[in-house]
Image 1 (cartoon, rainbow, N blue to C red):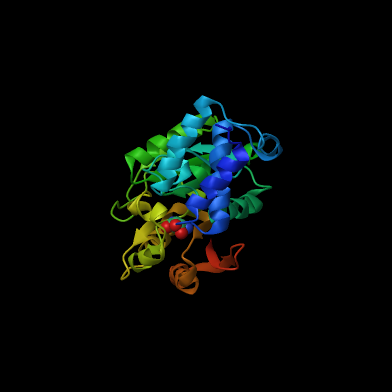
Image 2: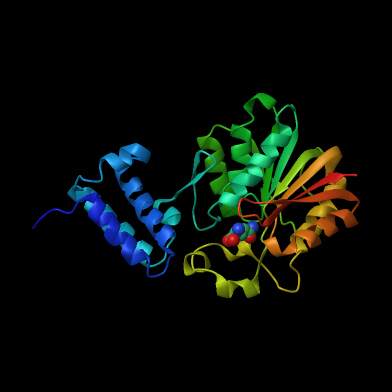
Amino acid sequence: MTLKTWRMLRNELSLLLEAFYPKPEASSLSRNAIEEIVCKRGIDFLKLLDDAPNNRQLEKLNIIRSELLNKKPLQYITGWANFYDLRLKVTNDVLIPRQETEELVRIVLDVIRNRTKLQIADIGTGSGAIIISIAVNSIAGNHTFLATDISEKALEVAANNADKYKQCICLFQHDLLSDIKFPFKQKVDILISNPPYVLQSEKSSMLPNVLDYEPELALFVPDCEPLIYYKQLAKHACYLLNDEGIVFVEINERFGEEVKAVFEGMGFQASIRKDVNNKDRFVIAKKA
Ligand code: GLN
């Protein structure tokens, strides 16, 4: 039997994955799967494409392949997701952090660049991706970081990730929809959130890797109440924010004007920002 090289194995896996992922995604998934197994990325990965795996690596590949063919996201198989130069632990209690959300982090980091001692809060933190990447990338600012989530299990994941990056993030269990007040002792300067915003009716256009594995609680809103989280955020922001405070939220591309109007209705000056795909993706609201 001739040994197969990583290149052959990657092509085989990619073809199999094309049955349910678009070609570019199948190709990058198969690459990322092998990168995980060989613990090498970039040029180091390319250099070993003509090598053959050893038995232990082949065994790992077989396990990952069968899970990928069950449409399980690679990040839940390996337990790790890359986000803004961080490598974060993820379980299926938290969303896999998305590229759009990296843009949200960049927008916030730009705004706070020359400021110090801010109170920065992330509502619905999940894995902690937003608040930890902001903390790691604004070390000199001497800020205070707060984060909430409704899910205890998500908070455990966020705590693990904060420890991994040696960041002090005060985590609170809090239900944005039904808890009356936020558990923070002080007012905040920067409020960030990527709340659930996908409509139930949008499920039909989503891939099974998302629908079958990612937490519903973190993704969906009822069709009759698409703005429910933004309305709550705007209401709480009125008393939570300091005078110069700013809210940054990620949004469903279909509701830019509506989310903006929610914040304006509560007395904020709001604007919409687009993502790299030119879709309305963020609303920034300042106290007027
Ligand atoms: N952007 C995510 C997705 O499309 C949704 C994130 C969210 O609901 N906040 O799956």
